[in-house]
Image 1 (tube, one colour):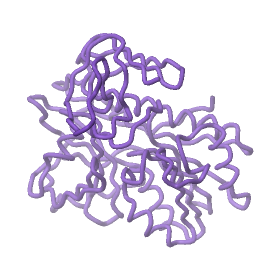
Image 2: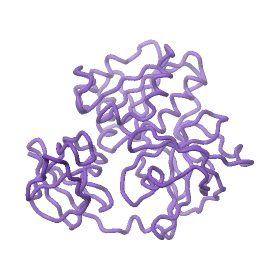
Image 3: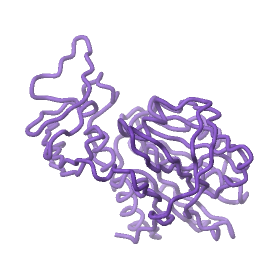
Image 4: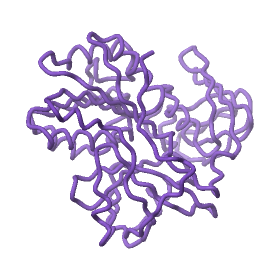
Length: 358
């Protein structure tokens, strides 16, 4: 495996200094994600940022105070913006996507982190960006910066999502693609494109072919990757085998830069999931605040799913052992058989949960 390079974080034992920021706007990007525009007022100069940096919010969620960090995605000099995708119920992402309103005031710390090496801008490069889902948020900042910083940089974004409706910043990416220096290639899990390389979940063979297709001999290349752990591991392995080999710079959302002493999110109950799909059984550690499908996504495990709202029933699985809890979405003409669950609706509720989708 290649050496993994992560974004550098501040000391998690340090309390960040926060400033009040008014919420100027909340714009929906997809059914599960929003773009939040903040107005720091006179403190705006403190929110000038470098590509890949993020700001930390001090939030009160269900009676506990916690820090949660999100990437800045705005152009330099504009009001700070973060994009948030809902990944769990009762957490920060649900607060941002379902409850936050213009006019609210949030406590926000100034940008931190270092991911983009300024030496890249000393000469022309080809930047290969690999994103999955909300992993686009640090990479759209990198892409915007690279287009602006040098007229001879070239940028290729390979962006994986379950379906077209899940693509964050689709309009912005289409606008950026009008530049001859920026190319975006979408990979959709639902097969909507009808083309081999852009259909279905990425695997080693597809990644090798994509690297060969988009490799540029005329420029030195640097790679960045952001998304679920399984996706990043896959990109790492393919990039190392590529000739010449690449070592992607990784961004992990699992590594939060600050931990509030009142935040007990890490001490809650967990479960061990055993999920059989495609003839293989996968063992995954899960918090009990995420649905089974959300946990599988985060682990890079491909599970059949389309709507993710309990309508299509593609994620229906047989509950072999253990207990789950969650919502029940009633669809006329579609009943969940006894002994089965919808993985997009149910969360683990026992120490061990075993499910089969075969």
